Length: 500
Ligand SMILES: [Zn+2]
Image 1 (spheres, rainbow, N blue to C red):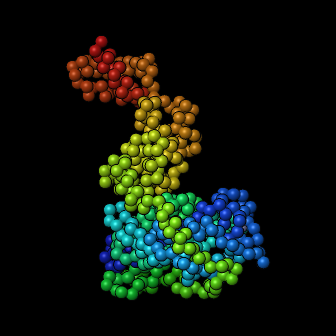
Image 2: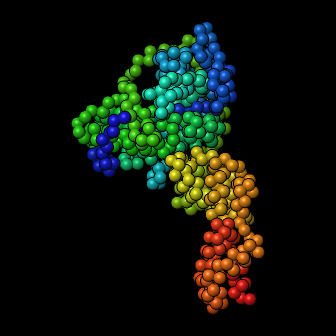
Image 3: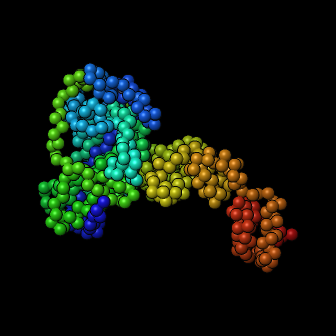
């Protein structure tokens, strides 16, 4: 992969205005696929959830999944969109091995939802309104696995396997209008927008919304134009970026890459690009014109979708509280200061903290674990904290063990690493690995006496009221017992010994 020249980020923003556009695909969690009765289930044995319809055998006839339409309308309503009274499906014709039908059934010029808007808050606290152009229904393609190469990509692979279980899984594609004015915060806005979409579809219960499983995928369009120029610059589309961190990094990278080219007078090629998490860079995909000739035509085997007004109003009435309302409510319930709460929102941790609190943890303890140690671990693994394999119930259990004095903070952090490694619940790890705090007086007194033998003046110092002298002994005991001593109890015992 050729190394791109990048312009310094601040310098790029001085010279150019950034315009982004985001296309988010949301996989719906319906029981069955979009146009057939095959199971919609992640992780099943390859090619077991397939039938003549989803692999496009001649003569098979599709039928629209009503639940998928319902979920799509809910998404449209939650994004403040108009819902189309009638909408046809179309065939988008192209060949690719993961698309056995040779066309994707999608909505083309008649999307189910259009003209919406979403207010998105970025980490600095600023709010941007992102205008939604459309949200339309379509079906997913199968999944290709490229075998034999070092990267898992098609380049260098010896052969490829195809799994059609995902072919025909219902998708909603949400397309924004061009987003102007975010400036240096465009990368953060892109990530925050996808986080909001994820929050919404999860809140609606229409998608599992796990990015690492591809339930939510983002294509990020980026273009630059000199400040003051009206005409939009040529854009690139970075495809299928699958974590919030990557979205932010990919947008930032494209800004710097395009700026360097434009400054040299080199034209930007309108193309799709791929994001490489390992290299932190995008690479060229395929050229993309504005009007790729997919020979769209109305799908003759499906009747138009015509949701009744009553049905739409019924769905509107059943929408959960808006994300902004929910934020106000939980912040008040948890008693978080504005800054504390913003950290939680920006890390996308509201669901996790809610789950942890409802499993019995105090809100501040839940916040501390999620935004502290767990965020640190995720960061060291280049992950989003929400993608860590740990439930709120486990975090609550861990906090409970600390509160009960069974483990101290240091042991709790150790327990956490084993829990994340899949060794079981915090209590199971503590029992299995013998990580409980030692509060057995006999063992503690022996360790204190050993420490005092080396620092005989400490007892006198404590008697004279110089309590800071106790620290050296407590430290020595903690070290001797590898951090598993109950420091509070060591202190008490030491004072008792001094006052004897
Ligand atoms: Zn099927």
